[in-house]
Length: 237
Image (cartoon, rainbow, N blue to C red; front, side, top):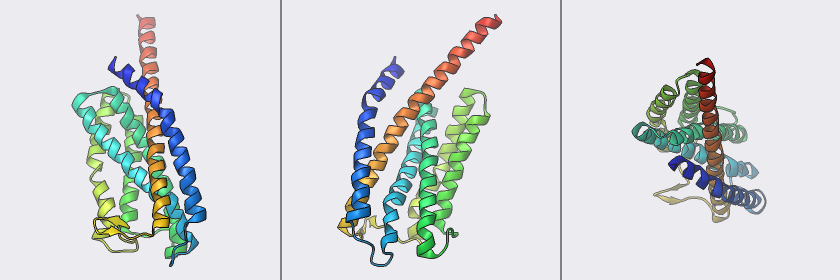
């Protein structure tokens, strides 16, 4: 009953998240690509920031949801939370790939290379490998209980990579610039900051919308598998 109410609530609000995400991303893109000023040093190349940064933030947020969901699942053994964690991992791969690809496109004219062994890049790539490993682990195991449990343990252990990603630009001063928004203040012009914030909020809402839809899909898939299993058992009996 609780699961049914949760599914119904997700279905009721998911459309609003999708519409709000679309509007914010469209306005943010217009302001970022058309009305904001180019960077003093990087010129027009800096405009890829309006995709790269929100994608990277959403990827880390997806892993945080996966981490929280994994702890909750190990505690409560709630299958819908496991579905949510599973969905967050898949969406996290999507946003991580966008961040890495746009980061490489940004790096070529800025650093004159597609890739470098920068701590931020390495730790971010490790997060991608953990997420892919999580999804592969869930694919290979046939026992649903073990699949969810082992996946949750892997996600919790892998969470140690997130603070390394966040603070890597502070701990190791390499090619990546320090954080533009931190406790030290904001070191970005307002006409660049506003579209960046709009894009970030839009991406967070887009992630939430995708999470709601994907969680329901996984829940229905599992429900269908369970019904098939019961039908087959009756046939064999």
